Length: 276
Image 1 (cartoon, rainbow, N blue to C red):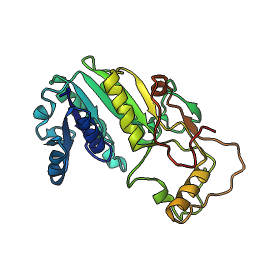
Image 2: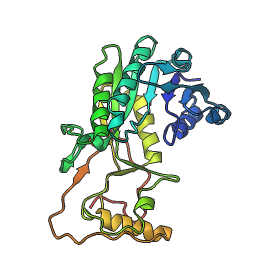
Image 3: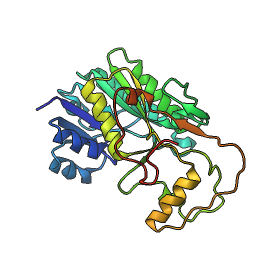
Image 4: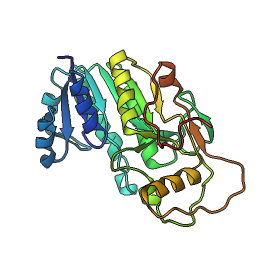
């Protein structure tokens, strides 16, 4: 049996990640906020914990969750909706860091988002300075800095692009919509399987104190891509407003993980498999 890894947030990404790591021989502590999911986690070989992060405290057995854990994956999206949630996410992360600092955790992988790049345009790498514009993006960046500046942790950050995979694809929300803008902007997406592959690569090779962009290295225009995906699924195609201006938007490069010999394995679409 390999080391014990704690994954806080066993949702769409965290749950299949936990199962993948168990298959590789790791012992996994996994958290959920749903009592109804505890049995599912346990039946999958995960040691389950019912934990809820709050601004002022943490509900649940956080000490047991972190017991005998040296490496932790923080996979808690902000979920901010409106100004009434101002400050809640970063306060939750501060409470979590306090618990981590009182435990044996020494390695932490924070799952972040490319939303920290805001409205920047052009090719962006891990060396590009983040400039978030949404409240969600701002607090995610603040959380990155919170964990990275902790003197007792070796912390790496993954900034994933738009997540696609089983039961999740943005085309389902765009199907049939009209008047869509920015059709010539490039997409920045990544499949669940590659998310798990990148996380495994970081954990198994101890790539600590680094930042990684996690985006598939192919960026077709939104209009081209989403129309194609809608047709494949038999959905009404989205309609974009004609725009003759030069192609704008951002192309997020995953240079750091690729330089470490990680090869993306799951294309975001069968029709687009090479960089253009």
